[in-house]
Length: 77
Image 1 (cartoon, one colour):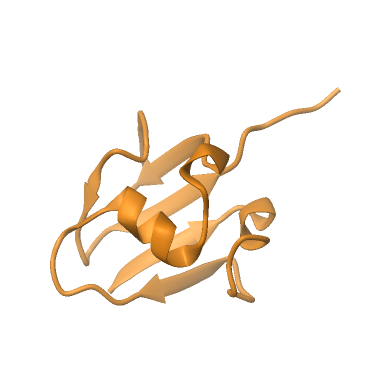
Image 2 (cartoon, one colour; image 1 turned 180 degrees about the vertical axis):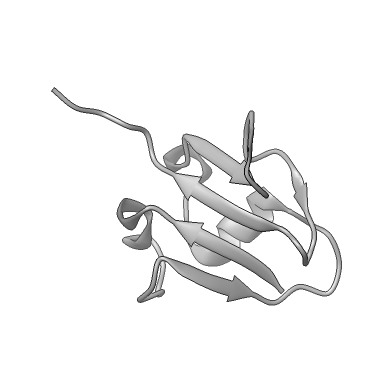
């Protein structure tokens, strides 16, 4: 199982009630495929952190031992 943690703004796209949850997977998977499965448009993800390290995009492979944190674009004023 892979652990996914979402910023609250990304929960809008999913059926999840909690910001951190587990997703079943038998083999390494492409993060974009997991986002599609969860209903999260890849364009809504601005920052990805895998096992505590920021990665450049959603174009990465993850394994069942990974913890993935996803964040939307940040804004403020």
